[in-house]
Image (cartoon, rainbow, N blue to C red; front, side):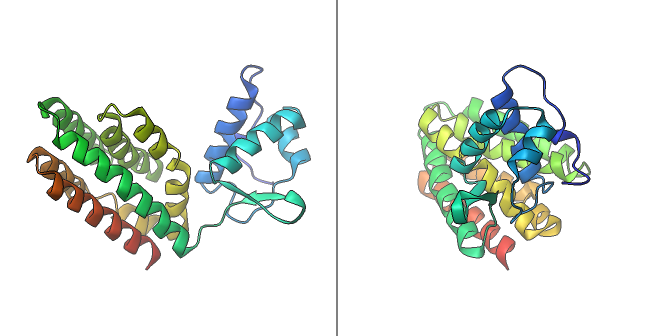
Amino acid sequence: MAGTTVPLLGLQKQNLREQAVSALRTAITSGELEPGRHLVETELSEMLQISRGTLREALRQLEQEGLLSAGPRGRLSVRHLDEKEIRDIFAVRAALESLAARTLCELPDREAAIASLHQTIDVMEAAQNASLEERIESDMEFHRTLCRLTGNETLLHSWESLEGSIRMSIMFAGQEKGVRNMGVDRHREIVAAIETGDATLARKTIREHMDGAADNLVT
């Protein structure tokens, strides 16, 4: 645990479990806690300045989110994604976001939704020379917004449950490949397809976007 940075320092004495979940999630998805690393409860509880009971609750949630995996004797480690898992993640993303795109195409007045999506693309464009973390967040916000604009809370919740795994897939591939998936023009194509109101075209564009992203990450 030597060299651990800010996310795993002591937490404020309020909502400790939620803060622990957030700190550990950030440490995992940023690569601070690298894939395959075994987690030692005594070290983490001391580092986070929380009880082992609170820590276990936080770890249980992260395991449910798919960020941790249990090995022999239930010992937890940071999940390591393989090629099949990444393709599975992006297949599910494609299904969810295709539903979102179809739903937006069926709105009688799509203009407000289209304007919101263009705003997220403007943020992506502004972040092109920013840090990798900011670029990832701007990309994620586009796709999160796509789902949120449908008004379907179940859809949005399902998509958000994949966020950690999506970030880990970028870690698996490395910065160069991850950034390649964040091209502004690729996202403008999605918005343009939704703007036509053609649900078939919008779904096709989403699926091609996700298939291409997965291919890029694993090849």
